Image (cartoon, rainbow, N blue to C red):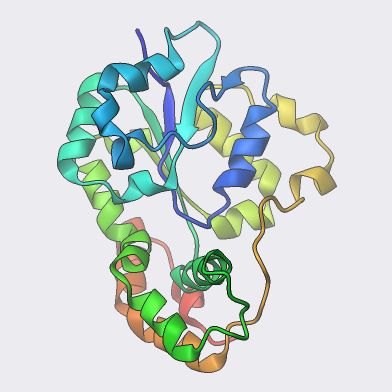
Length: 240
């Protein structure tokens, strides 16, 4: 069979580069097309054969894939197309507090706009938070429901960025089990190496007025997501 064994579908600013760097070190994992191929969200004009050829034939004992956070936002028809090609794909989706995710993404957008954080006004940040792109990236519950409507729930591992930060070794162990590789490789990796941040943007505290705006924006969605996953996510909405 030709094609990937796994796909990481997001979320943006939720540790996907850290996952890529650590999985890339595993002797039984391959990313032949690099971390993000962006075929399903931006390059479909190249044809599905092109995408499948990025991975080539599957090899016993090896797992190949990509991690493109934008895939969390694709529509149901696209997910059906992916399932038709690779119905046994193992999928994973890492969720970060949408307030922190939105603030992190906005800070990165400031740099791309060739501004400093001081030059970006409160209004500029509010516009970014409310943009269709930012809201779509933070619509975790909707994304989970779309992917679960096509793929069996057991093929989609949903994890929290909080757990990645708190227990990186345990997080990798769970991920390895999900995609079908041995986690023992990471037992020899020093704890400080596992906790090393990868691809961090400029740090800055979230101003209280902007935090309140994001709490208002995401409060209902966080509550709904908690019910969907059957976990308490109220700490995401707490004031620091």
